[in-house]
Length: 271
Ligand code: KIV
Image (cartoon, rainbow, N blue to C red; front, side):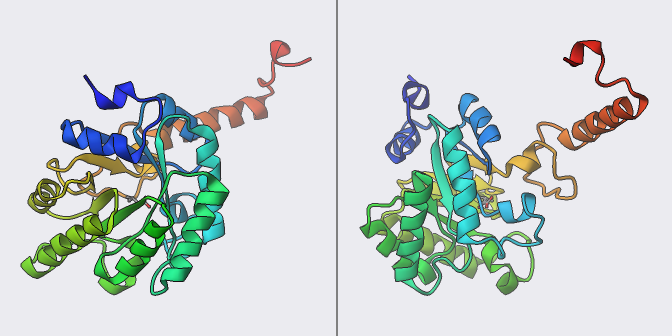
């Protein structure tokens, strides 16, 4: 029997049971009501209101500029479209680092003002105090290790992380720390597949990969990338399921032609 097909509402407990039953978890990002409804109806298990909204919704180069208020706007919109999936909202850059009290306040605002189910934050030992403080309020926390885009200026590159033994070891230690602190799941971004599989095997909580190989407990992609709306971004881990950029441009061009030639609206399309 499949755990995820049985449940009316996906919870952190559902994800834990899915891992125990060896059932993979399907997660996608989303930032608005209309697409959230479609993803939920399609049976996606986890909808992540990622701070990648900064890139794909607002056109910024990095995830750093997006604010807590903007994440709350996106989060509340997504929650209104979702009945079944677990909704996780990213805490943005500046909302939790180096100040656990601020982290708790940010997480409480997200939970109160969006009605989401959980928050996600990037980092390991450095942000452990913030993770622990958020958890004291009963707010579920998803971790995020490997390539953590909010630290892009420290890394200086978006290339694969933890290829060297020292960084791989730190990632494993951080994953264990986050699990011990009480995180319900961890995202691993752009790391060697063998390392992803090792971490997933060692942890009891589900490990969701994005460029983390096939040995983890689930996968996440940025919605605009997998739908082919973004065109420039072509990492190896990305599988495109549609080429919406072409289809949307084609539809807009046909509409424009119909308007300019007077073909639209026709008799049946007016009152
Ligand atoms: O913001 C985001 O889209 C993310 C995913 C890449 C996991 O954090």
